[in-house]
Every structure is written in structure tokens, then in C-alpha cells.
Length: 118
Ligand SMILES: [Zn+2]
Image 1 (tube, rainbow, N blue to C red):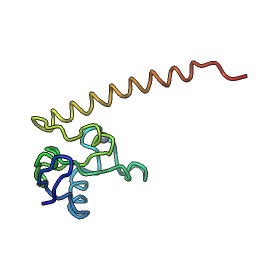
Image 2: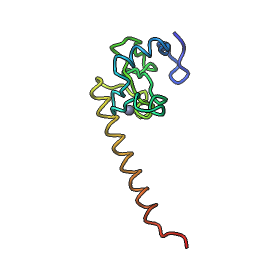
Image 3: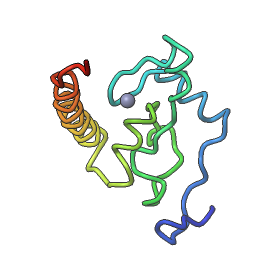
Image 4: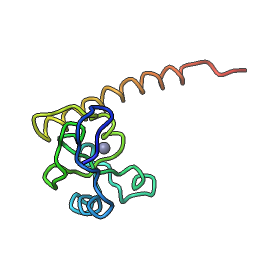
């Protein structure tokens, strides 16, 4: 069990390639939070990860029941917070994604509203 420098506590080892592939296969290479399909393109495949639902940094176990296929953006948004269960984590991630989308859309709208440079 390696030491997490973030929390100075012992954490479960990251999953091996073989263990990760088993989880990705089980979840059909789809992010269990946003539904991104890791099989539709090389770019999507590149962002697929295995997420510890109860975070490793918070002593989450490396057990298939605690592991899900996840895209990197959802993994980053979820962070190392502890949720009551997977559904609560999913609700949090989807809400954050929606909030980020609104910010992004408002910025994009401003950009396209700018007058063209003559
Ligand atoms: Zn996702």
C-alpha cells in the first residue's frame, strides 16, 4: 500500500492494466457518470480511466464493487470527495458538468458576439 502525499495516508494501489481492462470491459467502455463511449473514437479511448467511487485517497478499496469506467473530465470533477453512494457521486458530477457547460456557453456567446475585425 503506497503512501498518498496528498493525504499522508496509506492508499490502495492504482489498478493494474489488466484489472483496469476488466472494469472497462464490464462497463462496456462507457463513462458511468456522463455516458461517454470510449469505443467511438481514439480520442474517447484516450480519456477513459477507472475511477475509485470511494476515493483511493480516502482509503477506498480496490474492489470491482468500488471501481467504475470513467472519463478523465468526470474523474477530475469528482475529485477525492466522499459521497454516500455512486448515485450521489453521479448526481454531483452531472450537475458540475452542467454548470461548467453554462459558463462555457456564456463565454462562447460573448466571443461570437464580438464585432469582426475589419
Ligand atoms: Zn464522463
